[in-house]
Length: 140
Image 1 (cartoon, rainbow, N blue to C red):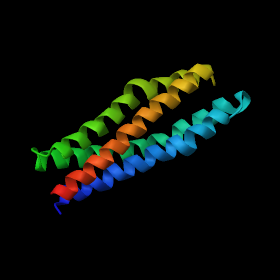
Image 2: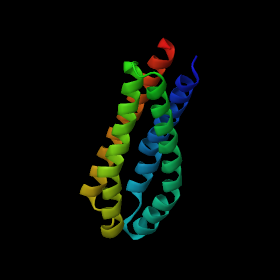
Image 3: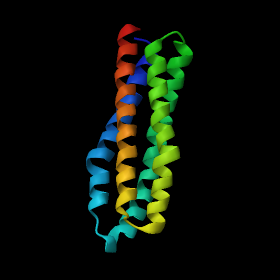
């Protein structure tokens, strides 16, 4: 199996696992924090997760670019790259601004709901990327 196919599968799987963990564990815990402790919990979450986001997104981006550059005619590689990009785009234009607003306003229900919805989009995109990466690797 080509090197970049393996990298694409590994990085999209890691990204999907990360997103599933955020969706199933991290955000539900954050939503349940009481208003009196929310600011501290949200600040700690933001500080801790930023390094992990940079690592996971950097790896996913590297895998996607490597696969597309080395297999430019693979629709599955392109789909994996586009789905990875979609997850990152949702983070940049929706989730990150919502976190900023939550950091300023506190645990407003509408903002938390919007954040959870944005996270679901990211998770679906990350899972789609992982499936596409596997299809690409099996076809390579």
